Amino acid sequence: MLAELRGLNEECGVFGIWGHEDAAQISYYGLHALQHRGQEGAGIVTRNGKGLHVVKGEGLVNDVFSGDALKNLTGHAAIGQVRYTTEEGRGAENVQPLVFRSMTGSLAIAHNGNLVNAKDLKESLEKQGSIFQTTSDTEVLAHLIKRSSSGSLTQRDRVKKALSMLKGAFAFVILTEEGLLVAQDPNGLRPLSLGKLGDAWVVASETVAFDLIGAEPIRSVEPGELIVINDKGLHSDQFAEPAERAICSMEYVYFSRPDSDIDGINIHMARKRCGKQLAREVQIEGDVVTGVPDSSISAAIGFSEESGIPYELGLIKNRYVGRTFIQPTQAMRERGVKLKLSPVRQVIEGKRVVMVDDSIVRGTTSRRIVKMLKEAGAKEVHVVIASPPLVSPCFYGVDISTDSELIATNRSVDEVRELIGADSLTFLSAEGMLNAIGRPSDMKNCGQCLACFTGNYPTDIYADTVLPHEKEIGR
Ligand code: SF4
Image 1 (cartoon, rainbow, N blue to C red):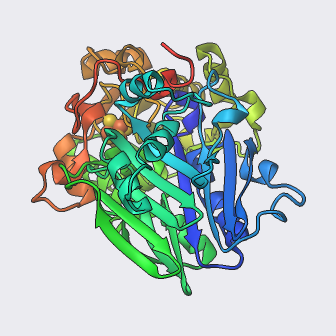
Image 2: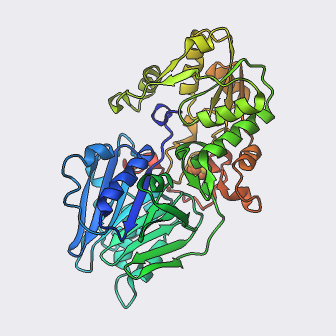
């Protein structure tokens, strides 16, 4: 479904490259491919022999890098980020990569994820004299690296020491005057892949960025791994022992582009298998299957193939509605559905419609779409969801806010069905989803995080953990 319609947003996407004369240009294309992961801000930092150079700002990649913006980004190494933020958290100072300059060397950091102990660390750093320039949790890492810079530690050891103090979800790309550093949290919560472009090394939140620039995917960055890339080559190290593997399930369900792979599993094919599994878990007498564009189309095709009910284009997305229309209030979200989706009356009228969606957050959008289909003449609307009910907030960088906003928290499936006005409602079972995605079955939960479906978090959650939507507004 459309992210902005329902308050389910990924925090961002990161990109990095080392060893290419067109580092800035390639980063620009890489960020384009990751644009779906964040549309509120974009930035690129390059490194040449004279230091770090930065261009960043609020808006889409195209807006930030219009005209000659890339011209001054010289150097053969770069990192970049596209960013989602809350309405309250907008502000140029929070756009990444964050750049820190000091007598002992400059560094730039781009981060995907959310640190669950950021508040504790920040308080302790402030007591020791640190002054924070942003409200981003990412800045904590820069202060920790600088604090450990005394003595004879190498840069790699300083970064390792700093990373080992962080808890939560983090995929970091860090650019210094000495090298490109890439780190993944011990649970591997957020996706991060390593690839090669000729002799250059590239890293990105999704492999779709490699496709666009013609790079070859090599592997995922491993949990607890710190990769250091410099002119001597690539060096892999561990800053922490790998913990329970827990890649975010919502990457497979919703966030990642269908043409990306995570740990060798293609997202479109995984979603299609989820749709097939759903069709095996429920018997529905329907005339037509339709998916809510875009992220539910793959599951709808799978459901149709398995059930034998023909797939049709029952809902059309208006691709030309600008982001000017996107407002975070409930009232505007409801209005936004009409702006962005339209039913195809000839497909819907007089039919028993099976409407496939990837997930339900607040339920507002589902209710509006069911109503829209009925107004277009649907005889019955059966809603099937290609993931389990969302019942708990995410602390790891996804803006699934408080559980009071989630329609399925403390409600039965039938109560939710009634609220959205559907004739029937079915969710995919957690077991069915894990089997359909097809990750290694010898790992707990097949190595996936299921916390927003179960409330069982793979890391400790600190009492003062700041949720993504609270991050920039204080508490
Ligand atoms: S809680 Fe949900 S959205 Fe957050 S990382 Fe886990 S699976 Fe992903």
